[in-house]
Image 1 (cartoon, rainbow, N blue to C red):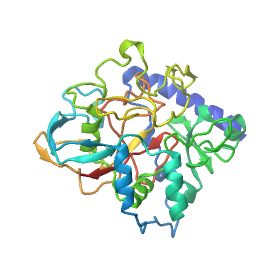
Image 2 (tube, rainbow, N blue to C red):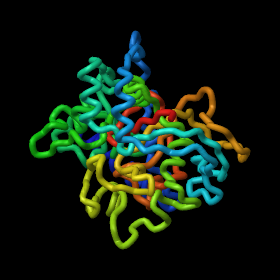
Image 3 (spheres, one colour):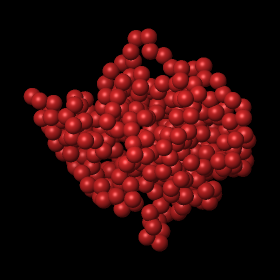
Image 4 (tube, rainbow, N blue to C red):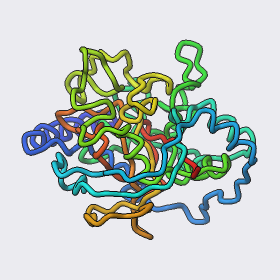
Amino acid sequence: MTVLNFYKIQMLIGYFYLYVNAVKDNSNCQCSKLNRQLIFSRQEGYCIVNNIKFNATNVIKEKRKMVKINAGTYFIGTNNPILVADGEGPKREVVLDSFYIDKFEVSNKEFMTFVSATGYMTEAENFGDSFVFEGLLTQTTKDKVNKAVAQAPWWLLVKQASWQHPEGPNSNITCTYLVRMDHPVSHVSWNDAVAYCNWMGMRLPTEAEWEVACRGELSDRLYPWGNKLMPKNQHKANIWQGNFPTENTEEDGYKGTSPVTMFSQNRYGLHNIVGNVWEWTADWWVIKHSSDRLINPIGPSSGSDKVKKGGSYLCHKSYCYRYRCAARSQNTPDSSAGNLGFRCAVSA
């Protein structure tokens, strides 16, 4: 059997799986299946760069591009969960100290500055591959792929895909016909995101901090701006339009990622807090939450997966309705994909 025929069979099986499960629920985006452990184990001798040093002036400079969230009592979660199995509920009270959070997702340009200063190599670069949505790939690249996610064959493990080459070696964020330096950095693992934040003298936001920032002082609303997806018939987020995964009408103007400065979404002035790319948070994944009032919650002390929030340009209500503030998903800390990025936070 040729690689191409193998790929086509996998796609047909996947479309059937998507159709059957779409009748049951809309939780089957399979982003949480993009885990390296499901394909192979970590290479012997492989290690994470953990000695990144930061320049204290970074914090002062970057705060000008951050939003301050004042200390106070807030609510996260929901008593009306849409994807119950994800642990979206219950609605619970949290008390947070003041903190700053990036107004924008970390861009390719910013990540390139970090790499140039430190020589850091991402986990995708060390592993030699990363997950890419098949709709963004050329047929030539698809023909070379022999690994796909069984339940979601539109996710392909592409050799040499990385933050600099989002669709593999024949793509580049500095390509003249599609310069993406102002787009969010992608193909970064949780470990990569932590390394960048550490260098900046910052950290990833906790899940509670992220969700409070997402809600923008609104209570019990689906989205950062309210309950209507398109108020005044305007697109407020970079998500999928059309029939996933075969037709993307690009009504919001984008097939893949959009610049980090697009789509201002709430009263805090945060951009792309939902849609565009998933965003890593600091917390370990757990689906059972106490309804008790918590002070500066940081999640469990250990786990196997990390929480990611916000959904991405591949999310659609019919199959992955996770571009909501209460929505959540997870991946292992070493996983990377073309729709996974982050933003930083720092305590005030």
